[in-house]
Picture 1 (tube, protein in one colour):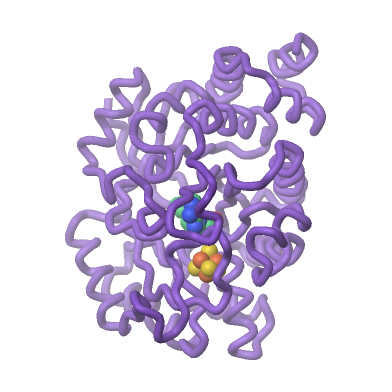
Picture 2 (cartoon, rainbow, N blue to C red; picture 1 turned 45 degrees about the vertical axis):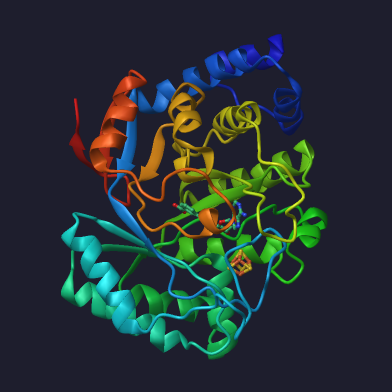
Length: 356
Ligand code: V47
Ligand code: SF4
């Protein structure tokens, strides 16, 4: 531990073995101290948030990952599919409520065409040019390539031309292939996920990156996942933020699992901050962490709390107990009460307002 501490204090990169050791320690307060040191060096006491809304156009999905309680098969009870007017009117409502970003992700629908998605984005951007559309995981991009016959790069270029501003980090799950096969056997491989992100970055689309933790994976899997991300980030610099997603265990095929502990949540966020030294931002996604752990995480390396969110479905279908949205005012006071400086950001991390 002393060696690792010295490396971090001197701003040196830590190794995979160091990261596993950090996961294995029970000295949570030491992890918090070191992660706070690393975070302060790049972000000071600022904590970012944005005003956004999630839109999930459909939950019909051909993949049916074992951890997912959101997806349905076609014609199954609870399956839904919005028409483009509905997606548009949800975006309009978000705009009227002051959102700067809409986050669009959904199931892999067997028949909705790539053109349908392009038209929806173009319509939103036409009516609300200032609205940032962050949309479509690498898994959806692969699906669009399959149904359209276009290459990954053509799909990404088409969506970008229609107005896509950046990509969320979903679909990464666990990139280590053996464990990935256990939790989402139908999904694109970890290698394919990374390749799609590489292509997105190469055409100027920034993206986020996630990890889904707290199910059947080992600490070694978590570190392998972060190693692959750190290497790609060294190459492209295209990732904006890393977001650990705490597994919500209810109503899915992996439903026998228990929720993550606050201890593991804070540890995972702190190790991410320490190992991913080339990611400027680490997000504490309050929807999955719960508001209280998210607040404490601001002293464990986290400098971003996502946003007001509004209408979250993926975590809540799997039993998340957090609210489905938070007001801007509540987010600001949650950050201030943790003795940090709230800063409203846009989707590309430009500062909009320092709320001191
Ligand atoms: O890819 C599915 C995860 C992801 C469960 O980029 C689950 O800013 C926990 O990626 N328990 C989609 N997680 C959500 C996502 C995301 C969320 C917020 C912000 C950003 C961003 C991205 O949700 C999926 C999957 O990894 N997921 N089911 C579950 N039961
Ligand atoms: Fe489909 Fe995504 Fe759910 Fe997997 S996580 S079943 S790809 S909606």
